[in-house]
Length: 294
Image 1 (cartoon, rainbow, N blue to C red):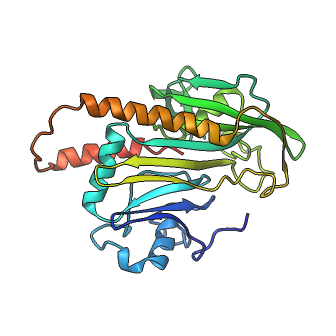
Image 2: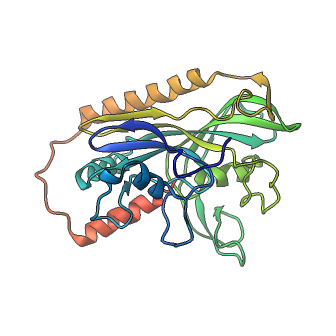
Image 3: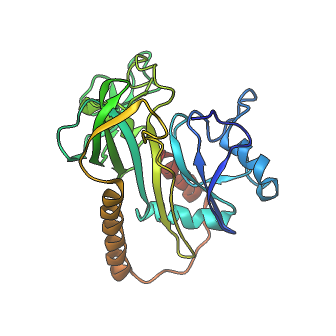
């Protein structure tokens, strides 16, 4: 629960092509603002100055995004070719991501599939937020799917909460936060989607626990230590365990491996590589921006 600093970057994976770090909560990945003294980009430059790429604006190529308030596994490509291989995995939907969260209230069902479309909130004062289709001011909603597995129920500072494992099968901005909030189970400490009322916890309780990117040269597979445990945060007191985290993850990984095998069997012959046009590159960047995740 110590605050983030330039020095305390936690490394989960390192290879010639990729780094995966355990991003601290309440830290931006990068920023163009001079006053942003602490970002993951600055941590990386401090720890690995020799790996910074002068051909990029930030020095490092982030393969996906995590919100300022979200902690957990974040993958960084160390060269253009590696970034392209990771992008291909995202494009073909072979990436597996799973998040841990504490949400307000007791989730009655042991598992749920949430399919509410998400769009931009256009209401005055709320344009920094997303919203689900059918709510006032929701613009251009896009299909979304989140799978939710209940792990434990208990109390956080005396209030009823549920520990859940969330798997985003799409990657819309704020998807997990919006879906949980729309169901009536907002994430503990989510200042934005509680409309500035949930201010007591020291952080938002959303953590990118698992990341699997099966590139054609290496398999990136990491877990970032579960921070929502009583031995790490005494305010969280589980009272009822529905399923273990290890059992839930075995289920998720097994399904993904099976899906990957089927795709490999059905995969058409690869076409010769062609030079990427600026239009295609721009489309790629737009697609990645939609994989903002959490």
